[in-house]
Image (cartoon, rainbow, N blue to C red; front, side, top):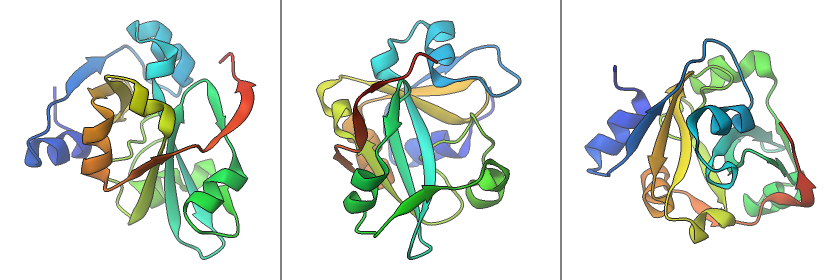
Length: 162
């Protein structure tokens, strides 16, 4: 398997990770990825890219079956508001495709915030930066590699089926 930017960053930092591959040639939901790979839904995280009122970009990493709370997200990065970038702009801004966006190796400078539920888990899975490939990593290593932080950024009580 060819190394992705996310894998190269982790290799450069000497951080351990496992690669999980699955058959996929188009966008599928993170819940579907969890089912295909056998990873618990609570351990599978998705990467959402937003733009703040300041025009800075921010990355939020949350469990695949949860929804981002835009007010909590904005407050966590000291913005008045944030909104998801349009799907058509994902590649231009991140260098990744929808469904293959990793919080590591994004081509624009972004803050990275991970939902704090990750801290109670031994490992989490994030996109490796291409469709059909995920990385299993310790949350503390992800936060260190991304120079990120963990805090509560999800909507309370909202759990998505797919």
